[in-house]
Amino acid sequence: MRFICIRIFSMKYLTAFLFVFLPATLLAQHSLSVTVKGLRNTEGNLLLSVFRSADGFPSDDSKALYKAKIAKIPGSEVKHIFKDIPDGYYAVSVLHDENGDLKMNTNGIGIPKEGSGASNDARGSFGPPKYADALISVKGAAKSITINMHYY
Image 1 (cartoon, helix red, strand yellow):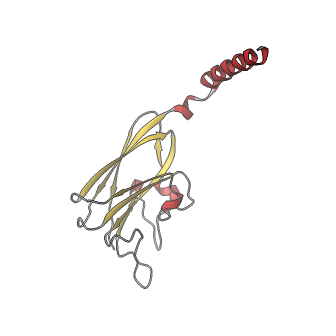
Image 2: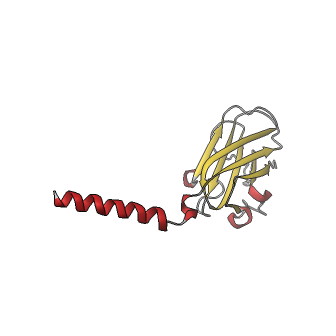
Image 3: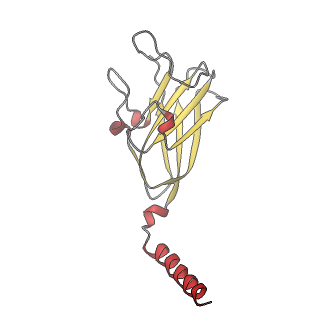
């Protein structure tokens, strides 16, 4: 009986400790609204990925923290909302997967055949955009960004 009382007493204080001393930033959750503009057609899928590190950015969505697939593109502009995003820094990438194979298709010398875009309208020169150029801050409130599609 004494063991049970001590355990309940300890759990009570542990729970109180976590709620009092756990930083509020870890508990903060926000929405990230992404508007994609400039889609050249409604074919295929629109793939959105949110990365918390440079690892995998912009094209390896298996390393993305959040991802979404929009199978029915309604027009030249699409809006998607990611919910429950903790405070932090993120980079968003978008792929207009026109042929529906869930990957970026390129020509013989590596130039993309499908549209892409990134947060902050980051664009790479002779390659994909850099994570640091696409970083956005999600802190304190809901965040809205616009990504312009680029076709080469």
